[in-house]
Length: 359
Ligand code: SF4
Image 1 (tube, rainbow, N blue to C red):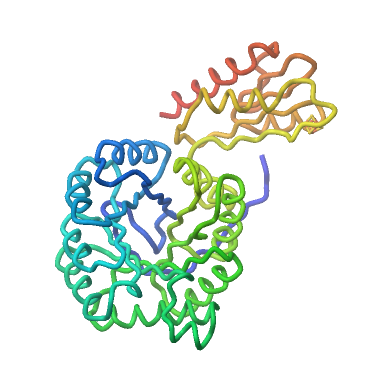
Image 2: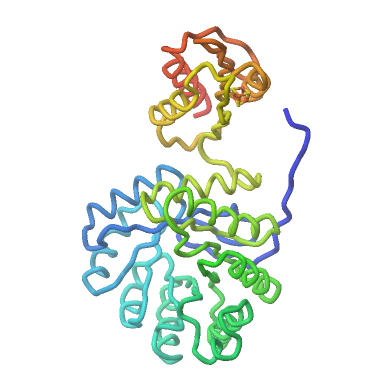
């Protein structure tokens, strides 16, 4: 086992509670995602929430663009396995209407139509003990700040501080802050500056990060840089595509930094001229068969004898491939030699056995 212990000291933040999930303080960094079904399609939305919750998503955000969605949200709330966040834009009346049902509201006070309307939302949330995420986005900066500073960290931080001032006036402290832009260095610097000025918990994300592995890379860099500095209390990876991938990438980021584990850490080699077994096929088929299980295990599939036995031995379950076969390891011990045609099945059996034992 590695003797190197990586430790990140998190910046102290005020703790709040979203349903049964704590955010901030010493609470684990929570993972969020957002449904992309029609909210009014309660069945499809619930199915998506359940699928992501099974993969470890702690909180789900749901768009509420109209009054029909308020009704649908109210139906979803008691059925959801995780707390639900209502996402409201433009219409303060929807925010007031959803407050009795939501575990949290996400608003951008800049597009609600003036301080008075934001105050009404704050009063409604105060009455129902509902926290609010104040979301500042690069695409909707107040005009005067944009004129004065351009799209810059100063402008984004100033916009967030202005909103906070209004919440402070009304003694409302159940807030989470987020500053998001699709430009990673800008978002990172703005979140850093905000963190230096206030101790409210921060929600991190690179907005409109893009599809698949491109979006994952950009998100990992933006979110990861801040987490490595101890900034951030809850994260959302925004990807165009299957929402499940957002949760998978979020946990890869947290696991990579040693902040939180959920599910299997797959270690596999990039393959090269020495590879004599189809490593990619073995890994992808095994991943598919194992599915999304939250048990934290390390599984290694290595293509040859160079680093294979070493990595396979360190993992909970490992395979070090040779010519047309592989040595199967469990927690450092060689179990047996397995022909290539049985590698996937025996790897999966061994993983599921350890999952059963740890449950
Ligand atoms: Fe190549 Fe072996 Fe390294 Fe895989 S483990 S990349 S097969 S040298």
